[in-house]
Length: 372
Image 1 (cartoon, rainbow, N blue to C red):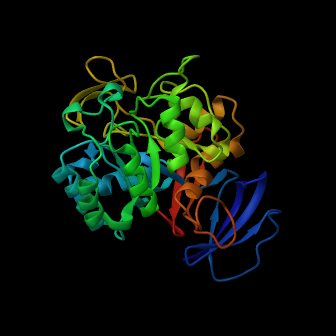
Image 2: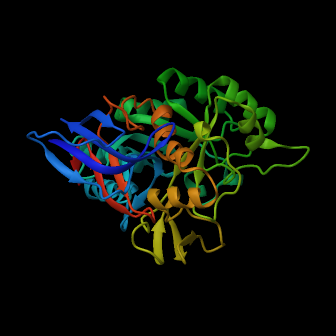
Image 3: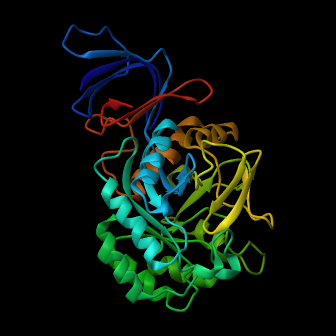
């Protein structure tokens, strides 16, 4: 497909261009006209952006489900439904994210992802994020305790035999027996090592970060809280420049933020995303969603129902500049996952783009130069 996106308000890495044109050819951005000069005649489709906001496709590194489907179902349909839901919310790439489970259920989830990759109906699968099962029961959150266990390199080798290079991120509790050995193993695999559902002390977290951990999953949630004599994972992460943080920006989960180069907007969504209030089964738990907030019976937060475009809006509404918010939703996750041609509107990059109205509602999503 060859087209020109005309009359769009463009969010670049260093500025917002009030009126611009963007040339697309064979799935790539080939030219940006930041002055919106007259369009020459030619054999290409012209798409009028109506002066709306054009941002790079957002990238969700942590999503479990949507539209009533859970990726742990182990079916291609569930993965495809999440792919569609992501695209509808302005997300063009995502990590299929597991919850703690039996080894066989996890392997079946991985197999279903492998069958879908290359045939996605919406957003593209950038890989797999293993959230568990090597997590601390003391900070389990909504993770099902009966599936939590200590790091096991033999089991992890079996997982990699099935998934191979698809595993891009693994969330662990490094203080568990075998945790530091697992960090060394994952570092050799080139995986992003994240900490969460962890009771690690400040000293244990600093050791983990020095050994290769570089990310914190849903920061502040599922980890030892800050105490003036026991600062824990959170303070350790804020002190380390190379460590990035996930933020569930839904006005429920999170308050404090790091700089945009170290922050990643996520949904952490369960299957209630796109459906609304009601009762659901997630990770072996009964979950109730009321007024958009998902909780277990005891009140524990259970993932979220926020979408990426909503997370972007909430972030801007907190006072974060739009350029920084877009960096957190698109550029920073692309950098963390080493998706070298995604995350910014730049000539030569993939034409993964989202057109948003003034309320951050998605007008259309483009993946590889095709409007879905």
